[in-house]
Image 1 (cartoon, rainbow, N blue to C red):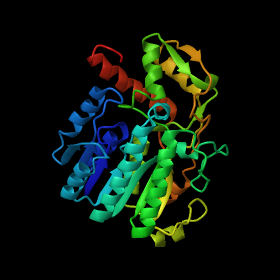
Image 2 (tube, one colour):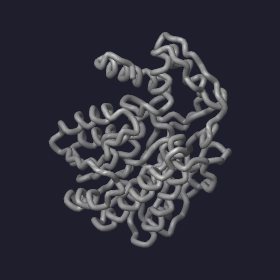
Image 3 (spheres, rainbow, N blue to C red):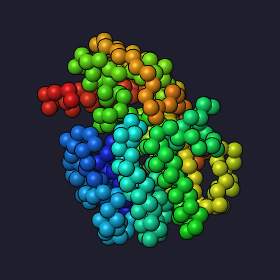
Image 4 (tube, rainbow, N blue to C red):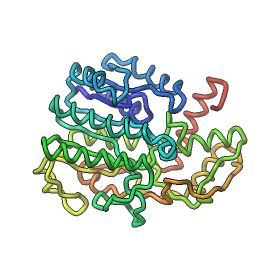
Length: 339
């Protein structure tokens, strides 16, 4: 199958592209290769993908409609998996315009082009952050999502609304993927596990927000990739939607939102404790108030995902941390630093 993947040099996009290439699919990656974080990491991921005969690539911004259009119209994909976005809750407070351009305008361009090439399925990455100030756990797809706490979360919710309207008007099969705190090898340096590891190894203080009273549904990258891969051939239709009750909203469109999480609530200080144990080092903790835009706890219900695919997350956070550290120490040892 021909599959177009945006954000192919990003954390999730790299892992997904590699898995799909290993399964024999033709992948056209699209990535801006921006410097939001270490460009060397993105280039290293890209170098692995470009070794595959069936991997094609275009460098460009999502908001550059002409470049994006040329890439998609020439490749003529059957499926588009849109993972590219400007990430980061805290950065969105400082640079909101960047998020409006990349996440909203960029996603709108993707949806327009998906309509134009008549894709069989468009999958778009959303985020657990759309649940915002909701306090009832676990988060379910049927929950109201009207209280986003960051610009990043608001842009993700906006893309869900735009996608639904397009799906309703033109019957485009669209699945929104609400991802819960993804971590693992080749992860993003701005994420907690990466920052904690770097700080502990370099004997620097690590910032712990809300004085450590935080809980997250940490979801290992391989589980996320497995879930997305299983969903590719599960495009929603009006008939299929009628068969799924209880945990699925009923839309007048071939559209659905799906949580992808580990379904386990992990206490942040316990997460750090396991990291210290695996490194054999003590963390110097700098306890701080909760940051603007942060939520205190996330926890996913994946009942709908399981009904559709039989999915069960396989990786507990202790194993996930071990796998991440094995990659991290190997990757940075070769570069003779731990940055």
